[in-house]
Image 1: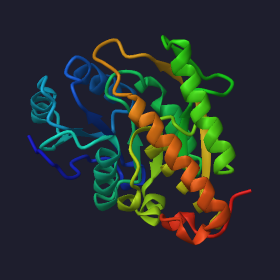
Image 2 (image 1 turned 90 degrees about the vertical axis):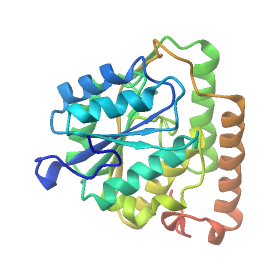
Image 3 (image 1 turned 120 degrees about the vertical axis):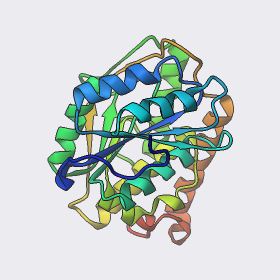
Image 4 (image 1 turned 180 degrees about the vertical axis):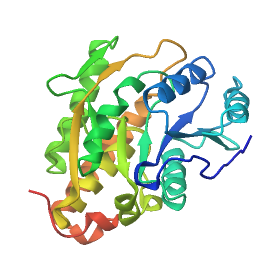
Length: 270
């Protein structure tokens, strides 16, 4: 086993990818999800970032890493949040020489069998590929109407406030090119939850306004409600996202110099 591991795959540098799986109480699904990822993309490497799960997820992840060199584990001392977990994974992907970092839920909501479609778009040149629910071919299974409404409203507010063209700014199923992540500087992304996903996506949109070679692609996916455990979505996460998106929208219009991420400088997206 290699906890907090470095690269151990024999995959060519040109297609190396690190799948980042943040976990908190995902012992019921983690083993199945990792097996399905490797079935879909055998050369993938996985980094499990566990926030001291009381259900033993961290220990299970270390057991899986002990028998499969493609898996590494980062165990954190307490629940530090989705955004910081992904930032840790992004920084590992950049420093480890991976070409792509992949965001994916560990609860089975994001189908590993659809990862090759996202990777195909990344191989086609996109700096960011988003698995999108709200486009032709995309769908959601098992969500009540209010969850659908929150998701649609979240993207709708982001589109208006940030002048975004994305159809699913809050989706957490993504492939990100690490050389673009390095420009954005992940450590400067500060939001959590829905807002984290919006902030990263908007940073890529802004970077694309400065560098047309950095494009954002959206690929339809099927999102499946988790079969085990409980959703981590809370009213606080929703309100944080709304507050931050409106704040960023105000800055975009009236104080562009105060936008914090390097990709969010004064050039506005149209």
